[in-house]
Length: 273
Image (cartoon, rainbow, N blue to C red; front, side):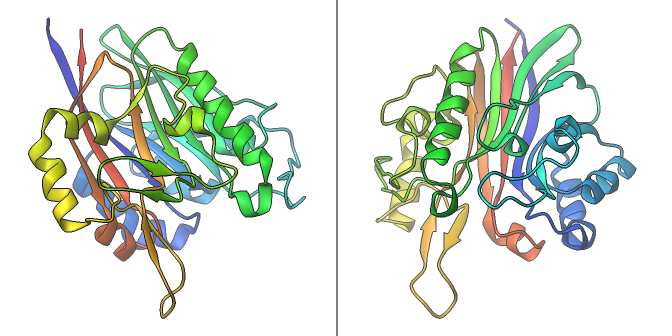
């Protein structure tokens, strides 16, 4: 079998175009991925990326005019997006208008040299404002992952779990969806970091030595400076079993410096063809 290697970046860019212009575009250029799975991207931010040669569609372009976020009843200003550059091409995008937060949902097919991959960029809304709708969003994401028959990659801001321990076990928020977060997994896709650490237990041991109370990697720190803060791994890249993980990096410090409050995840993957 031959392998097709490529790099995917999943990143919640925090929806502020000035930050995208001043730091995030530079970081993305340094990482040089072929596929972006973004959350909280604004229309202005999309335009900036298009000027850099990226092709893609945000969920906002697929929503009815005047779409309001259900929890707050205000027009939404950012959404998930899938973008490609180089040899990969978009081959159709969709959102789920019935999910609680369709602006946080974009699925697509990307194609290269006759190979087609299902990809998704998702976010679960915060439970403090959305309550049970957060769990419903997570369940729908898990259902989509389960329905994909072929190669599948998804970048997800899960807004959970509440705690992840060094051994990979988790404690959930009241409105986390266990079907998505793995405690009652309802799909065949797996978290890329867990897959990597199973194959390379020394890396898990090194991560556990750095963070004996978890998480496996840091993508978000909840709490305010000067108060109690908790390191979390809210963000993850999920892959199907026909995608091989070569490496996964969580660039928390670099991403904060570039203006986001979430780490960019850099996943180097190989698709067996």
